[in-house]
Image 1 (tube, helix red, strand yellow):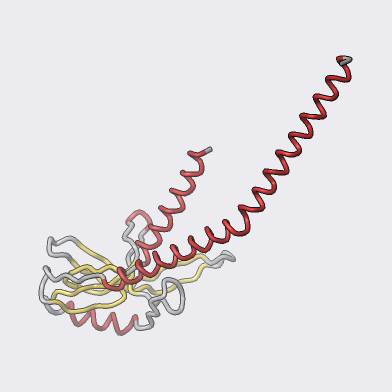
Image 2 (spheres, helix red, strand yellow):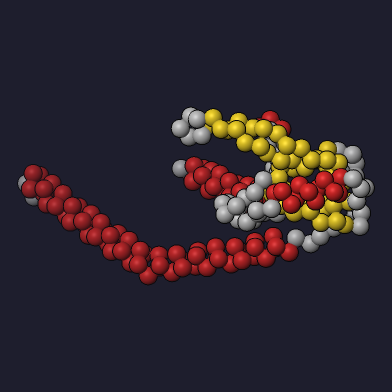
Length: 197
């Protein structure tokens, strides 16, 4: 039973860490080589197929490997980047594609070719070269605040458990012990009665 418990805990923890890795911002240093618009068909919950245009930013790394980013608004939904400037970002990317400028692309999400998934570009920032690096201040602050909040919640649950749940469990345990003692005494009397002592 302990294996099942720890397996469930590990699965929930892995899913939570995966969600954080997917949704927190990351940066790539690339050169933009162009932009693209593709028509995609999306099936809604009621089975109706809708078509929409999806913008892409094409880039390459210092090693020459391709990087492709979606360029879609997040709006008010999750993750909360409040991105409403897809058109402006496309124009900026098209302008940078005409130069050899290195760019820091801030994005979230994963590239999974099997499912045609691309990370979503949030912003572009010109940098001095491919060796440019940034300290992930937002991620560090966010993860620190999240850890403190989870620790505070854990401590409150522990206090609640000690004050409210543990005394009730102790009372139940004592009641079971008393019932066991009574049942044992009753059994002893029944045995004595039938044995004639």
